[in-house]
Length: 52
Image 1 (cartoon, helix red, strand yellow):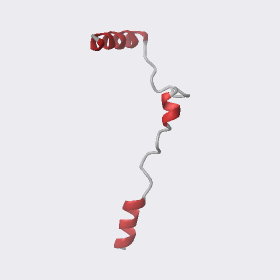
Image 2 (image 1 turned 45 degrees about the horizontal axis):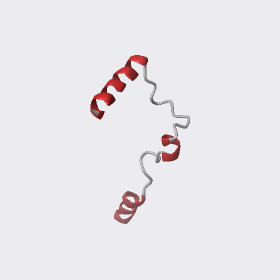
Image 3 (image 1 turned 180 degrees about the horizontal axis):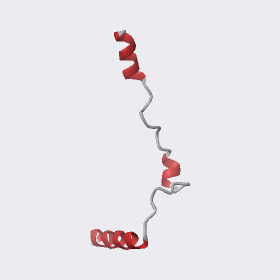
């Protein structure tokens, strides 16, 4: 039993599938970031402050 547990722990698949970095970096069909206009304005202000 112990060898089967060790094998399971060592070779089990990841809990979550890997994110396709090419689709994520290109925007793809990923709608997970839907900012409101107010959120976008606040984000732009933060980016401008950090850039100074």
